[in-house]
Image (cartoon, rainbow, N blue to C red; front, side):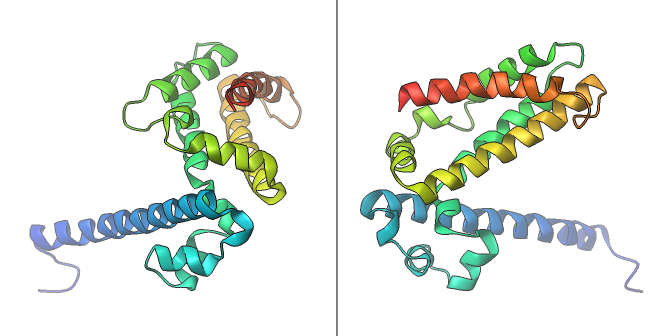
Length: 190
C-alpha cells in the first residue's frame, strides 16, 4: 500500500495526533499560567523568576518562553481567555442585533457560562487585580490584554456593521462604551 493510501484506522489516528498535541500544549500553558498566578500572589511579582515558574510547572525555561513573553503575561493568562470568550460570544450574536446590545449580551453570556468561571468568581483573582493596580509591569501587561481583546471586539463590530473601523468610529465607540462599563464594574469590585 502506498503512503497516500491509508486505512480508516490510520487516517483516524493521524487526525487524533494533532488534537492530542493541542490538548497537551493547552495543559502545559495552563500549568505554567497557574504556577505563575500562584507564585506571584504568594511571593510578589518581583520575587518570582521565570525559572521558578517553569520549575513549578515541571518544564524548562525554553518551554516557558514558547508560551509566554513574560512572567506578567503568564500570571494574567486566565484574563486573556476571558476576552477571547467574550469575543466568541459577540461573534455568535444575531447579525440584526444592535452592536452595543450584542456586546452587552456577549458579556452576560460570558458571565453566565458554566464552563468557564468569569473573573469575579475565581479564587484569588481579586488579589491578582489588586496586585496589578500596585505593580506597574503587571498593570501594563493587564492593559495590553484588555487592548488586544478590545481590538478584536472592534473588528467584530465593524464586520457586523459592514464598515472599515479605520474610517468609521462607530465600532470603536461601541466597544469603548461596553468595555468601559465592564472595566468600571471591575474597578468597583476591586
